[in-house]
Length: 404
Image (cartoon, rainbow, N blue to C red; front, top):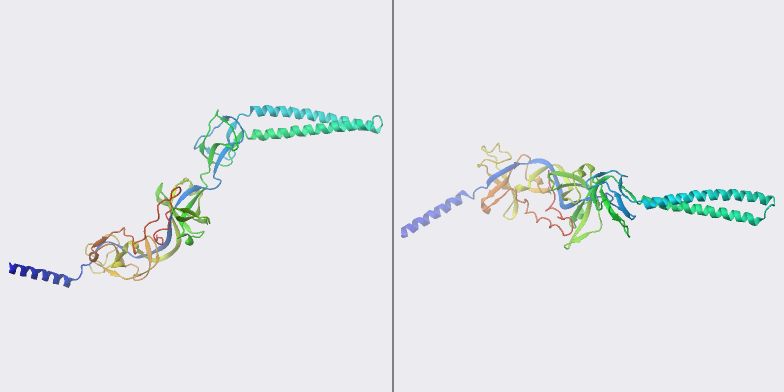
């Protein structure tokens, strides 16, 4: 038994000595990418919402009482500017109008007679056929008729105004967004106008981006903004920062500032109000920069390491994509400049055309790093969830923004 134990100990010692002679095993490369030049961008990530511009949504109401005799539009119908939206029963006003018009004709006739009568009385006064009191009576009668005619004309103007309240026209071109009444109903206008139809101009849209206070200092008007919506997840829309509202919004003890962006008419044909947007504000960009994929950044022994694929006769023709199993890689020091979520600018340590490992198993750390690794020094947690009662601001992205 003692002999067997001695033999086992000698065998284990020999195996351990042989492993030390061999050194640590090389990292196992699973995928690679060739370094090349591209535009590297620093961006801020946030959540926004599509809104209608001020004046693009109009609630059309009535200021008069009456029964609706004509309401031809339904939800979704296109509307031209100046189109008749609704009409109320105006028969009573029409009768009043005819009465006042008749009064005007009577007062005009009486005024004409009084003027001619006053002229004759003045001729008689010059011939001393009558006294001055008779002329004054004629002048007073003429003035009374002039006042009555002016009053009747003012009444007619007031009736025309009231009649205009019975015909409602669209102040803008757009689409009917809501209809809250129907023909035959009686509306009663109180202190506020009764809303009948809502008309929306779908081509006048804007986007509100809710930016965290820690990032708002880096946002200025004119910066490019890229955003996506859930309705078109594979399409990237572009706009630019137009204005930053000075009044903050505090939600869940977090301060947000609203960044306003206009949406072009062409883009507005596909977007809808209240759509949630995932936005990237481009803070700065460097074209033709040597770009390192962030998936190549590995955190090993408390430092960032990039594994460069070794050039051997067997791997001389290796390029991006799944490499053969015999590829070997070694860690290399480097210096980064502008950093984005997908690519970072390389200042020193690499040359264009070098092949780096984007997926590699590091035996020393006894763990695998996947292609979805967050890159340099583990990017901080993502932005906070949506604040209640409004669009879900997400703050800035984990670090500077991305490269193309």
